[in-house]
Image (cartoon, rainbow, N blue to C red; front, side, top):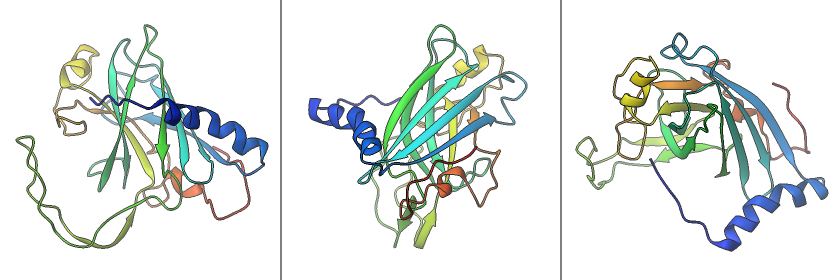
Length: 208
């Protein structure tokens, strides 16, 4: 789980940016859904998420709303190379906590569009903070585009309490999450939804 402190100026910029971008007619937007993962399809068949990404120029703003999940439970969101095992290169975004009805919402700022990628020109030393950490990274001499999303239980115990498989996975800050709950497996592996936000084109509203 990860918590962040935001300055007042950063919060004002984050909340107000979509409004001024829309007023200037410069906003590009996509909307899409996330579906239950294979591991959660039986225990949480009604779980879903709606995602909206607005490009406001310097950054993109991604709003994620989830429903049909266990109440008062934390989940971890990642941008992924592919939505299912083996996931490929993965980028931790942050957490979403549900309310007493199993609904939750969070907003993220970053690059969530056609230009989202990871690159490691060569291996380099990395700090070993947790027991499962690697001491160096694998090289990716060329950029690897990543356009999918995945959401995980923050702990195996939360998954078990929801009647889901209780296996441990590494998808949070301490590398001890439960199973994946939602993903963008409703899109092709090589065409995740973030690819549809092309910030080099004229403003457009997407379809799914």
